[in-house]
Structures are given as C-alpha cells and as structure tokens.
Image (cartoon, rainbow, N blue to C red; front, side):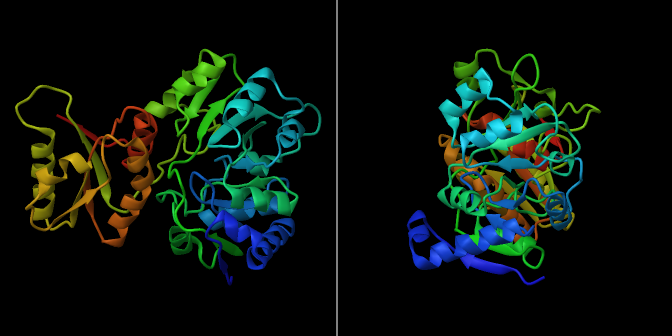
Length: 363
C-alpha cells in the first residue's frame, strides 16, 4: 500500500487551501472505509469509520492488535454521545461539561435496541469508549468525514505510543492510506479512561485528567486494580488494560528505593547498568534531569534525561519519545528511575510499568 503523507503543522494551516484539501481528502478516505493517522492532543490516533465493521478490522490488522482490545470512538459533537448511549446521564453531562473537548474517555453502555457501534469496534463488548478530542485537526477530520472515528494510538501494537508524526511514519508507512503529520503533540500520554457503567465510576487508565479532578466533579471515583498490575480474567473494557504496552525492544527494569539502606537509588542503577554492560549488552539509564549529573562519567552506558522531576508535563511529554530513542540507538538493556511525580505520577508510572512488563527492582 502506498501511504499518502501530508504535512499539516498548525491550526492556521487548516484555513489555507492546501490544509482544507488535506482534510477533505482524509475525510473521503474515512468515508470509503480507509485508514487515516492523525494528531490528537494526547498521542497520534489511527482512525477509521467507527460504524464500519470492515474498517474497524483494518485497524487491528494494520497495528497487529488483538481483536478483543477495544477501540476508542472519537466524536466532534456532544449529540453523538447521545446517539451512542441513547441518552446523556448526569455523570456524562457533568464530565463533558468539565473536561470535553479534552483528554478524557468515557466508557458507556450502548443504547437499548440495535446498538450503533459494532462489536468489531468495541472488542466484542456491549460497552463503548467515547472521547471528544480538543485537537483542531482531529476535530476538523471528524466533522469533515461525517463519521464517528474509531482510533487507537497510531503505532504497531505493543510499541511506545507515537507523539510525533515521524513515529507514525516509522510504524505505519505502507500499512495505512494516509498519515497527517503535525509534528509533536501537546500532552504525550493517552487519555484518562473512566468507566461509567458500574455502581461507582472507575478509572481504568490514568491520564492527564487525574482521579482527584474527576472526584471533584463526580464524588467517589475508584481505581481499577488492573492499573496496579492486578489483571483479571474478564475481557478488557479499555485499551491497555491486559496486554504489555508501550514497550521498547530492550528489556526495561524500573528501580525504586523502598528501604533506608545506605545504598542510594542511583548507586544501584549504576551497578546494575555496569553489570549489564559487562555482559556485552548495549545499556541505557533513564533518569530525571535533577539526577542526570549523578551518572556523569559512565563509559559505554547511555543516559537519557527525561525531564525535570518538578515538571510533570515535561516527563509525560518525553516518556514515549525516550523509549523510542532507546530503540533507535539499539539499546538492549534499560534501567529507569521511577517518576511518581506529584500530579501525573500515576499516569506516567502506569505507562512505564506496562512498558517494563511490571519488572521492578526494589531496594
């Protein structure tokens, strides 16, 4: 397949003749059942007509994604949520008023009678994941297509999520009809997912909108045990709940200090990295900017500064790019500090733990 790669670098570009032409072309691809990768404020998405069963199957095929891993349906009008759910509940209204458009996905029950979204899109579930993105290019594409767009992250399944157009090109060139390259995204972590189908709202995937922020709107909000790595046997209700995700090619271990031993966290990471290097493995360390100087002078060990611990947004925005850079540099063994930062630490560590397959070295 020949992939059309279109540069569309900013909101202002949508107002140009060339920008409008790109969106028109992309909308037509969606309508005819094709695949378009496009930017959102979180990560890049791989989009297809959410109601088209054959188009949804193409997403799974292009990504190599397990077919029971649900897709998120992206909308551009609140009325589309009512089309899916049949009605907008008080919880849906409260959350949409507070956080939409934005990086929040709601899991809702489908309307009674004939469901709108097929099971090929929902991963075989009767529930649907719905999001209203704030990125202007994403919204323009959804509106132009005249469709609700099912879109997981635009990467090969299991790889670090794409936060730049180049990441998408690396993974999906030749596998999709079109890639809209808009450079780097704003947030760099996928949307928060909250399940509204149970007795108490439950966060299935932490993200930029925190549990505390959700609680201020809804009251009690629980955290699914799968977020901490306790996986059940039920089908996953949201992306990223069961399978190893976001993973670099190298074996990644997170090192965390849990005791008052004299050995510092950085000393242990250095010792582990040197041991791996002596075994002939290309070895890397991922650390916060405040600690980078502690690893200076290490020969043949690559140190990746992910950003300031004091800046949640910086670390979140750099995480997937750093994991991909480890792949580009041919790393075979990675040791990472933990990044349980004040606001987004839960979301950052959720992604890092998934990337490491929950391989944690506690000292």
